[in-house]
Length: 252
Ligand code: B12
Ligand code: SF4
Image: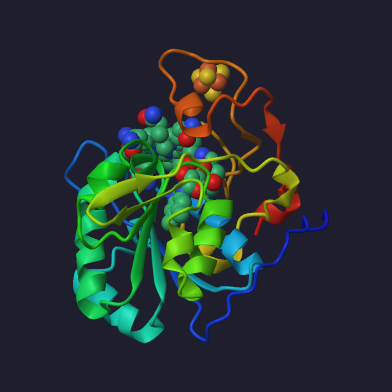
């Protein structure tokens, strides 16, 4: 197994530095609902970066776990997170907002940060909801680590200047253009240990192999196909970067 990549630590200073990272599901009777589930790799990368920076991280893949709003409220009371991070795609937007409302009702001082695809393409639509404090656009690891550090240090002014972060200030939406992580080897491997991997279906129709899992082997693309949004999310990266995660590790 290769050694974990090194990353600079920026230790959070406050006592409560618990962060809950979660997904929500699209409506079950909608066209976008997939019965099968694979672990959410983007969110696991975000979790790993936060753990590496010294935060206490918990994950709830609620697409899989299907907790009700009431159960989420109970979880928030139990975990008492200072920050909740939610992945939001366009299909999951309504549930993301519904969940954010429930979290704020339970713990009004909890900061809600939304990242992922809808957040990256349509940050204003998220910031229009009073429950959403921050939006992270694009690659999440560096932005969320800097943002969580600023929030836990009570430095909301610094939070508003972080590349890739969007937020409301004096009635205006501030949107700082994202930057990319230059040295991809700094990114820790996805935090698979934070999810109940045994509960996932982990099969893929055309593969006669089980368990199947997801890995990310590049960031960005050298091409620019008209139908593909990879360049929009990941920018004009001139070189595809290979991120090695051992296959042995993913067999867990
Ligand atoms: C692989 C993939 C899948 C896999 C997911 C495997 C998995 N479990 O992770 C499968 C096949 C299951 C899948 C399913 C679907 N997908 Co898909 N998928 C992709 C694809 C090709 C790559 C995503 C990926 O893994 N990227 C690599 C990781 C590292 O990046 P990431 O996930 O974007 O996460 C980073 C950032 O977004 C951010 N981030 C993510 N979450 C959070 C949360 C917080 C709090 C923060 C701060 C940051 C953050 O930080 C991460 C690390 O840098 C993208 C296209 C693309 N190029 O991005 C489409 C894409 C994400 N999928 C899309 C869609 C529509 C779907 C489906 C709804 C399709 C369907 N008919 O059901 C489903 C539902 C997915 C869901 N859960 O909601 C759309 C979303 C469009 C939109 N506006 O929402 C995309 C963008 C493709 C497209 N243009 O249509 N998908
Ligand atoms: S479809 Fe997207 S990811 Fe694939 S080669 Fe084209 S631009 Fe690159």
